[in-house]
Image 1 (tube, helix red, strand yellow):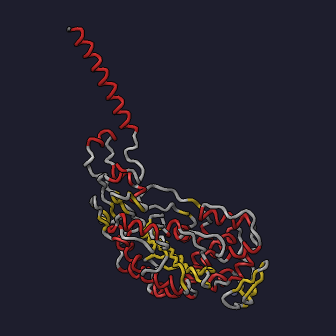
Image 2 (cartoon, helix red, strand yellow):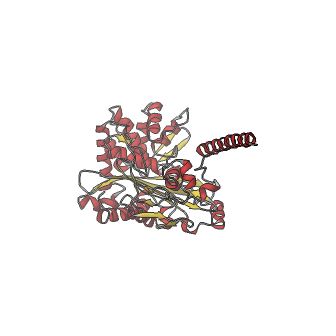
Image 3 (tube, protein in one colour):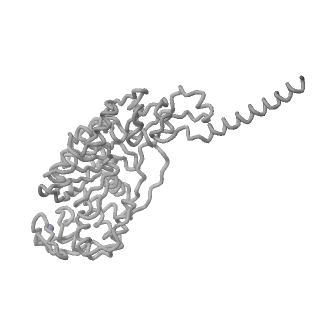
Length: 431
Ligand SMILES: [Zn+2]
């Protein structure tokens, strides 16, 4: 009898140990945090999301509360128990938001624990100011510090995360306006004349200031007649070509560049490759920003690199240590920055010149890219630039794109930026 009990006892202990080992193994290696649409994942208690000053942007669970509503989408994102997560921060920082860095085993026993908070680089007030300034226009705004910290990232049309439900989500996914799409990060827009900044960089980097060009108002390239906004006459140098935004000056001088120099410049700011064979027409169209598409974030990075003495920072929404990459010589960045100040002083971004007069730093370049549509021509208007509270020093880089407008960079984007900067210069906190 005793030996039977002992045998059962030994089996029992073995059984228990094997079961426990399987359990711990499966828990330790199971992706507890799961994919964004994993059922377990949807029900985790998430930590709060804060802005750079510690102000709470998102808190609570089921339903999760989004304090700035649509103004924070899609950069912040949303989480809903029936749908899962959407948007950038709620997805990318999910693990931190739902974990408490205890072991996954401990975590399973303790699911009620709220996850860690995530402090972002966003500035709630600048984010809301940028959203309001865009005023329902389809497009995007990115404002970042020169070290790559994103202060605001707006994309319109968007959605209100507080209204999330199965029905609302279904309508969002069907909308032709793509409200879930992050135009600021993932949109691809022809950059128009803002890309002349990159052509100027490529010339300066090979110690060229370009040649004088006589602008008659149009130029034939391949089979295409490309027009300038007017006949500028003799455009003596890069600075005057840039301030006047003369297409002919930039096309003729871009044709003197090696195709590889254009390709390198494109790669520096996008990480992508241009198509392999560049015809004369391709080069001319690239010179005036009617070639490859770039994102508003990439355009903001171009401006940031100029403000940062030629060093391109890594864009981010949660503070990390990052290293900037050199994309141009310091003296090149200086010349570009001066030319961009001139565009504000007396070029197409003059709408911002009040801020120069008030003693702030302000530099910019506008662009307008034409699109053919079944209903005729329509524009994407673009503006990139740099601003700072002291006269000689930029602090932030910005990029704005407004889609499907009959206006231009100077008439559509400049007033929007003027409104955001009014807030930035008078109300934003220095941090
Ligand atoms: Zn011209």
